[in-house]
Length: 506
Image (cartoon, rainbow, N blue to C red):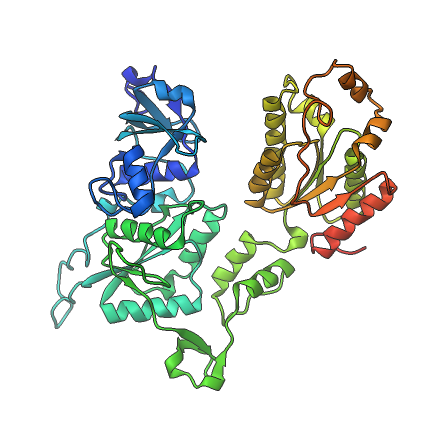
């Protein structure tokens, strides 16, 4: 045995689950999803979706399933690995089933841990539920001088959050913990692009939490299409596994694994400059709360977040997670038919941004990418999609680090463009420019002779002739280079970037 994997398992097929499934895998193995011991089968999943219960009647809020390629459904055992290819668990397949929508295949069955997951930042802070002391913790070895030892807390109040705790939430948390006689457990829910900032923001306010509060990161990303009530039920399940007796939340929901406590309304008292319950504030002294929209505007503009709203440590992390637009990474993605002029406009935009300064610019032109990044790919639909995904991956990495990626592929398919938008939007901003020059004009230009070859049947699956171009309905800007000079088109894109705050006016 090496690397924690028995030699008898080394010939088994391996699969890397997606981010949500990988988080589910970790929580199942840690015991945080009890009573689940593996991924659900078709009947259990259908029962959960329909009524929030497993087939045996146990309440469970969301389907916990594993998606795989069809070829893996032929195997009885699968090694599941992390994104670095390290084996984490063995799945003993009890059922292979197709999603009712027909969009994919699933495998069900119990899991056997091969090693503890070790991927992700702040891993040293993570704990299995059985690694936490029971509620109240161990009693002190000796009584304090002149008295009896204090009684341990009777309850454990959990906060399961994907957002930092501002001054209002910190005050509410202290009030509820004191009322319940509870120790506090903060569960940062990981799974977003800015997990590191979230955990640092919570660590930064540790001194403002009640004494003895614990911060334990938990991999629990948001699930697409899951309503807030079921997400809250899942949070309560995980909190209960970690020994919580209560969960602090903004809303109540029936059937939670532990009682949900909704704090009384708090506001900022402008007269004495403190946050406290609204009932204790004179109505004309209540200061309007900073809305999420206004907070976003402040961060976009690079303006300071007021101290009365959040501690400085949290404000600093907010600025890291959402830097000002003029310093934020951005991808400008041009799409259009061959010969539409998108490469010319993209090059002109890159030159204009370099001349203005203040931004690092990388041009990912379709032809250059084909030569350097996607050499060997054909022009089949599958390979064209792969080419666009590669461009999207590189653009997302440039954007992640604050750069400007300018892309100019044909990108004919809406689904693949949407996938690139999601990749980039997770780390920065995405602008889609549709260069909607008519096919007739593109074919008239035909400087490469491609349209002529396509009309002659020499090039199969040629976009606009023998293969469709799906016009975007989500473009931020539409250009027709048959009606304007290249400099005018570049100017329109620049105007969009200036008006949106990404580029300073000249």
